Image (cartoon, rainbow, N blue to C red; front, side):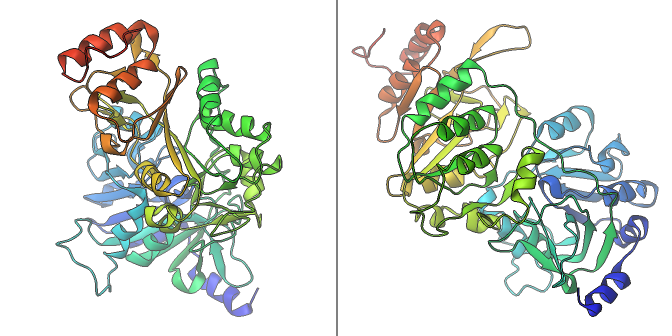
Length: 464
């Protein structure tokens, strides 16, 4: 390590308590997304509750530990917390605390929300984008390397754009952050950092994967039947995508590639089995592209300095214009409900915010326009409500408050444990017919009656 970088490091090094004194009342603070959320800085900022007023903190996919700025401000008197993509922790916080909100976003365009509010940017146009200029950016990073760079690790995403848009950049060094090779925008130089703090090296939060159910396995097997040699795979979050990865690893598929916003354990399984070589992928031949990772410690260890992987900023991982240039891109995601009009909700149940749009829109669009590509939205046909009653996830219409994440013209393949149906190009009655065919048998008759009432059913439609 250069002596000059070592000296600069010492000059910029502060305690977390000293570092957060840069925050003023009325400031907008960005926490890095996912496992990039600062821990020591968050605790120190929360401790200043009695000194501050009207501070907004913005993060995404909030992971444990619960942000101290929320925990230490139970009445929401000082801190407003905004999540760009809801998680279980966000839902719990919103249920128990005021001033916790969701910020609707398309992940693929996420960097533009920051790039257009850079303090000295000549393109800043407050009439075009409503997001205010940012004051402080806080992020967990890997230890500085010999060239003076801090790696974002498993949370590249929009981090570089966040840093470039903020007046003050504070990095929280943690030796458990993997060194994720790029790619693009995967690191920041010490010359672009204002303050450095050192953490207690807390572990990265792992995302536990539940044991797959028979329903998960059936859904995955339906999707598997549509995959072929040379496909490029994108997987969303959840148990079903991970069991699909294991099925692919045990299959005879060849020369698959990976291009995804979220890197999960399934990609490790597919790569280590020899199924995912990236041999025919263009661009990024031989590389699995991703913009953030959530999974097991084994996954994080696998990422560290792995040349088979390429960490990219979200624009390069998610933009539909770039995705459509990847041949045979297959997008596989999950949702909450689908109505008989083929609208897809992946983020709310009534007025209750569950998740967010994230990159679903990006990949549904990009995969459809990819040569030989397909988009799959998967869901179990039923779930049990609070009273233990079995309820269909294919519904006549959404309840008031339920958000349509993917509008009906964009719906491609919908998959349940009862099969997969392609909806593109179909009129309303045919969409209803196909969706009812993959609904749970116990609900099909009432769904037919609803479709008739809604005038999206033909008398000649199948009723078996």
